[in-house]
Length: 120
Image (cartoon, rainbow, N blue to C red; front, side, top):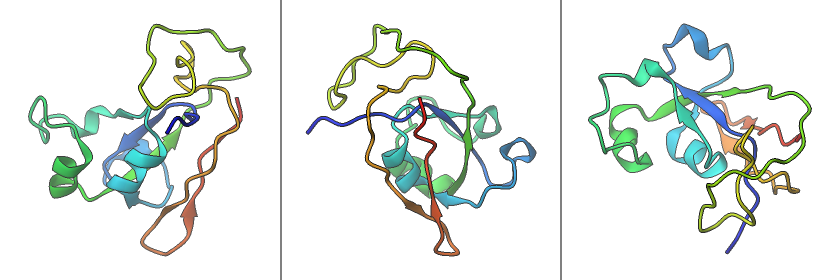
């Protein structure tokens, strides 16, 4: 089933000082909610090359901090990347699809939802 992709985010290890003060979320929920994510360099050295899937990372780092990136107001500019489950190619600027995404609430340990920023 095709879906809209929210703008890309950066995932941090909970101990990373650059991750801000957002609550930690389970990594598998973050991988599902933010398919255009990038791993911050704070994961460097902890993850062997080729093992960046949520299942493997969950064994190493079960929780992550999601950093929302402010891409500023921009129009959709098609990139060459079109994931199989995306409604259209990703935006070159933010790696989202600029559609009306259905929010996926990643639960935090406190039970509060981590809401994605869905503004284009």
